[in-house]
Length: 452
Ligand code: SAH
Ligand code: SF4
Ligand code: F3S
Image 1 (cartoon, rainbow, N blue to C red):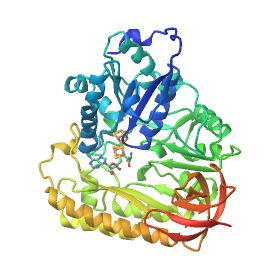
Image 2: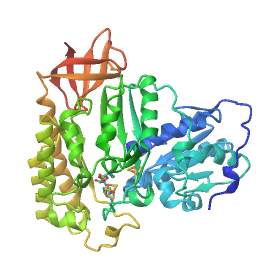
Image 3: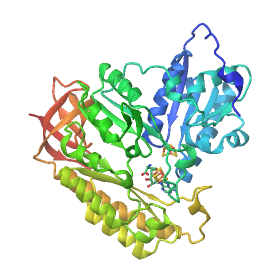
């Protein structure tokens, strides 16, 4: 139950600068949430520090997706113990998806934790911090009726020309292996006006590229003028913002790839030609067991349609190997799908049984060494495709949005339209410069180019 005291408004004390260290795990949604948490704590006099040693408060913004991710949190808490012993005033908070999933249990296992705040209630962090000052140990993992975004401070000046903007949260898909529907709750879309407002402010403050975020971002159905808006309509409206040069979105689900969004890839120049569209497996049997509700052939047909709209589209995906019951043939089907699609990038994971998910009850686990071997083979194929995609860029011209200085003198790093890192030398480049570049070389993880 929420602590009613946490909802009461208190006069902030005279501001004394305090230091906050946030460590972020997991997906981009957590990166975005960490920024908003830091902004919320700014009102309490906290400034960010990279060093946990000098912090007055350490927040771990956690991920529950695989066992390893969740275990990292307890490992990190163990490492914080000496800091807490040396400085009993140090506040330690656990936020994010492990907090949501385990709540009170975290404090039982790790008494040094002062507060636990779930993914949907972190707007209460300032009030919870004051509760810790009063000697309380608040835990809040509610899915509150109020919208946390309405209770968070306005976004300050951005140091970077790119920004994330959460437009949708939660998931109703219930893939058999996945904790997200439990940690993030049901699908909720933010209203159109709020998103446009946040985007305009970001652009006023120097942002030139916005990545719209959602666990199922293309399931977006936010309230706007004349009823509910699709993601495609939202993208087209955002594209009208002057000074905003690029729009991306992630992560999408194949079953929510509607015709209007495919069309936008063809005719909305600000929508970038890079799409992360996870499929998880190339075997229909496994896709069914995963509750993905699509076949491998349907996925491939979908890709053909998107590529017909935007032929230079670079695709990325997610794969799970070693899902319970996965046979050699099932895995070969995955390899075959990867060969057919040709990914510019992709992420592959060994299946991890997660408590509370339907797949965790299965007794036909794939032996670890078999899953390891499959993972290695899949990763080798993906790396090969990624290199080939990069090498095909050599000699071509593309736009690069520069973000930060590179390691070498006079060198800058930015991203191509296809989300590839590109290194370029140039005297007049600044963060936010969008320039045409000719690609001259391809390295393992990035490209090199020169200004045209
Ligand atoms: N909402 C997104 C991403 C969810 S999590 C989507 O639907 O695609 C990111 C990725 O983690 C997933 O795409 C999946 O490949 C992987 N993943 C999720 N649960 C997992 C598990 N139990 N074991 C291994 N990988 C998992
Ligand atoms: Fe998880 Fe599936 Fe939802 Fe993605 S679509 S967040 S993998 S349940
Ligand atoms: Fe992890 Fe939560 Fe994102 S479980 S992947 S941080 S939604």
